[in-house]
Amino acid sequence: MALIDNAIYVNGRRAATPKTLDETYEVMKANNGFAWIGMYRPSEREVRSVAAEFSLHHLAVEDALKGHQRAKLERFDDILFVVLRPARYIDDEERVEFGELHVFVGPDFVVTIRHAESPNLARVRERMESTPELLAFGPEAVLYAILDQIVDEYGPVVAGLENDIDEIEDQLFDGDQEVSRRIYALSREVIEFQRATQPLVGMLEALQRGFDKYSVDVELHHHLRDVLDHTLRVAERGDAFRQLLDNALIVHSTLVTQRQNDETRRLSETSLAQSEEVKKISSWAAILFAPTLVGTIYGMNFTHMPELKWVFGYPFALGLMVAMGFGLYGVFKKNGWL
Image (tube, helix red, strand yellow):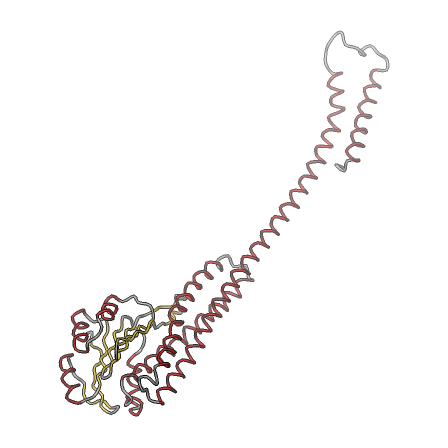
């Protein structure tokens, strides 16, 4: 059912637990208290019913029905409309799952419309009901408690992201080829986390500026400042994570380039060594080719051929072969081929 928990509070204590929305409206007026209506993925009819009873602005109602809104705070006369992006870290998948929570806060009501499993609003309600002196401050106290719960749930997300970044730093210097993909994937998670957390700072500061104008109790001042301090720390951690991942990507690119340069140098050295070997082989081939050439010429079986009847032909041919061999050897040696 869409109606998860529904209660009327008078002087900080639960006075009634209506079963339906219509009953809630009647009991709220009779007891002169405020209603805290918790809804989970309600139907359009249920949202329209609440909107009609509490005179919610139609633009805020449309946002609540459509969902997929960015974190924001809007005021319509004496009604606050707050969109929050709770998050939880999925360790097995190494990703951050983001939810969406819409909160309407009026003089005598709080309506929460949840579109995901987080945050744990039952815990918020239990905590507030255990401190009736705080709940007695009314709907604004409930809003601050919800904000506090969401910021607290960011803690495990920060811890999970920090652990992943530590592992990436180890992978960088181990030569893991998949580290770049992991860096990009984690960067997307961090960017989404920043989109959820950074607007909270401005939203809480805006609430803080409205303390005097809307006569917010001093105790709630302290409560909100504490939430703001925690939010600032979370936002700073998100910025630090983004910078660390950017640096990790630069380091990875540098290491890849260095490895490529080392490989290129190694290939160049191998190529040079092979070139030297080719020179030596070519030199010896040329040296051996010279006597072969002479022997081939004089080995032709032609009847009329010069030097065939010459007494010194044979020693001349041998000497020519040796002279050409030593001559080529000297030339190649001088040029560094041998």
